[in-house]
Length: 161
Image (cartoon, rainbow, N blue to C red):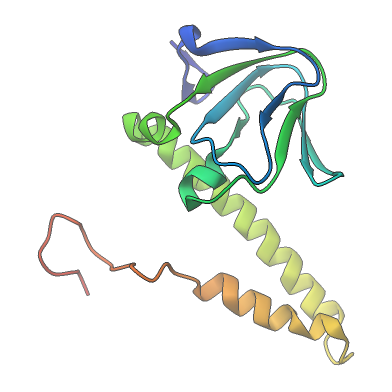
């Protein structure tokens, strides 16, 4: 069954009580969730970063794709229903259309962060304050590539140029 833009298998649907932690900051789970109903909180430490209440919202993807621990805790603020994919990598490999949607989501986030930093840079240009480091942050975001990155297909012996 498809619901929204993600393939949804109702056998993966679970109900969680308010207060349930789905992803814990600093841990690695390999899980991805898609929200069906309810409201979830995203928090870093004691600071609430976001609320998730939109049906079809996906979370857990950053940790999975970066192969790092979760950068925030995701907790149910209300009783919620989620679709749980315990092997998030397998979930993303199983449907290229879903993976493309996740890539677009991450690209939108990066675009928003970069736009915000550019606005800050323009606003504080010439002030010589600690915000002058925004240029360094922007350069880092724009030019960051994993060390093993090679353009081209893994099926080819030589990378495309």
